[in-house]
Image 1 (spheres, rainbow, N blue to C red):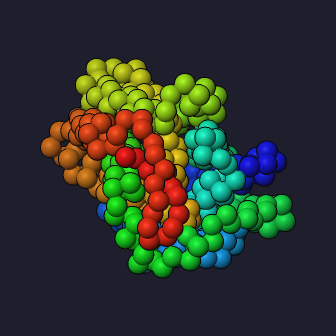
Image 2 (image 1 turned 30 degrees about the vertical axis):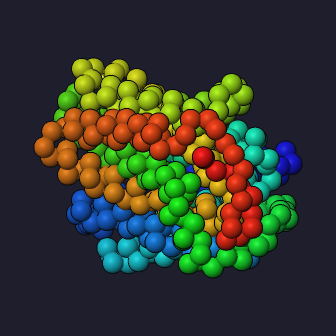
Length: 399
């Protein structure tokens, strides 16, 4: 991928995720201003993720049909309009409808961006490129609450207006400066949704998608109950919880931005994924059995590091199973990620009622199980090119 185009795409995704990060801390206050219950507040977050789970695969097919750039433009427009419309919401029903419409319109943003990176990078360079894109996303998400804090004194709705503007101002950059890559295998893009789904349930895709789901469940559990855990065990303040989340995000950014290239030059992607899962296993265990807040911070650092190296390598491995279009693959990847992020907080909140450490113990077990699953279901390092009879396409698969 041309350096200029990659930096432009990274900047676009940074702005987009900054806007998303601006809204998250402000959403509870808007919900409280409307008199919503904690359950209704939770449904606003879960509703967004569940909507993405349902519609992202269809956006993935559209990415292959009409191109990456048009879907990226629609997604950024959807982000911007959804944030701005939230200013006018006067009830729970209106807010929920706006969130669902926003999720439906914007769900194609991430898979379109990932497909652009994959299209324009050779197989051996994809892991590093995807890690750098992940760093841009994480950095934007990390900066979002800070930007939101700057705008909050201007009024309850100011962060939502700022987020909407941030999303909308990226549209001209995409339209005028980002080029649509040439499609190398148009035949894959013409597969029907039904045929694409048949490929997704084959082991090469299915196993990696299950790992994606498991990782999303465990990671989103952290965001769902860490604040409650720190209050219960250490009587921590909101600033302590914020520092823990910042440690997790900063760890991801630093590793993806400065160390992934070196790691990928020394180890194969599947081995890196396994290391990431082990780091997350110890990270969640560290939080579960913590006796000081410093152990929580250490656990968050380990989780951030594990996520930083596991997530891009899984996406890269998925992109090399080339029997369907990359837009479709990234659509299903984002769908499983969204499903995991909708299940994780709900499950963690329920388990927390039995014991405050339970969500983190279970998340640690999930990561350990995924490690064992890879060891026994994905062959270690052997790659071989095989011919897919249905499409006539050679693709990289685990044998």
